Length: 388
View 1 (cartoon, one colour):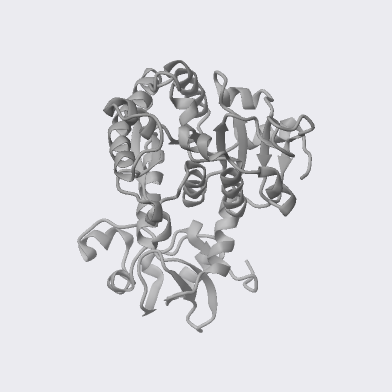
View 2 (cartoon, one colour):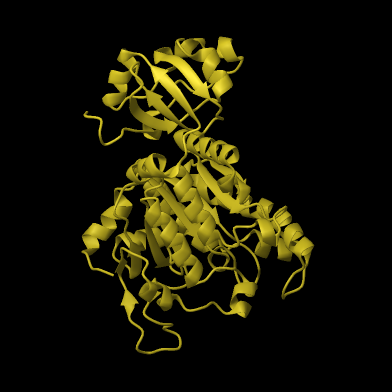
């Protein structure tokens, strides 16, 4: 725990390049009618439009499909069977996507629906495909509406809650800020509903055992009623974000224009990392991955890498090892000295075909239009021993 100014915390949001907003079922749906809370969603759409107008990229991780599908299919209240949950999710996704499209259309904002399964963040190739799709949608100006693919997920292959899903998406896309909109304005020293002495925590920079103890537990009945998250799942999400260099904030979404309220100083809890998403990603590449192959480069490419540029196929003179797209590889100079390591955009087979060629020749050589760089600068790290 620590303290810092409201201005500093506000800058974590206003200066973020890429923002994820996580919305729970209790916010997006009318708990009495089981329908979309259109008034609240309209105010959120205005918030999103404001962020977009500032040049910020926005993704939304939204619950609510099962709650909406339950009503549409006439399913009873109470716990549903697995197949009923999957059916409700299938029907509800259509209503949920339509609600977001209707809310954001007046602001000329295009949405895109993304359904993710646990394997999309665990299996390397699927991870890269999901990341590429999200990055492309953001580059084209769309707002991805993301949810877990509950129509096919079982208990064994689920994220289990959208707090954790949102954090994984933040990690996957190198987001700068994750906003968890909840029914509480952040973390307290104990449950404020049962302890009058509970104190609000404004700022957290490390998830310690003391912080974990503050989370308490979520009532199974409350979790079953609308969502599956609680403060414990939010701290799990915070840990993922801090490791990824992403700021995270827990705020009360039960107000109009909740994002604007955060910027205006509404009570909330900020979790602040020590590094940026790019730095955290490079640290992960440098220390956590086992290189599967080696690329040897010419003197020109070696110098370009030392200047922080991407590695292009034209500068590669040899490829060794067996690796797939997204695997870590070493990069060495003509003397065999390591000069960098990174994530390859191509498999070893494709790398052998395009090495020494210009990027413009890749479609003809491979039969498809791939990446311009063998390793993008964002996916490259230089060993500390190499002088810049």
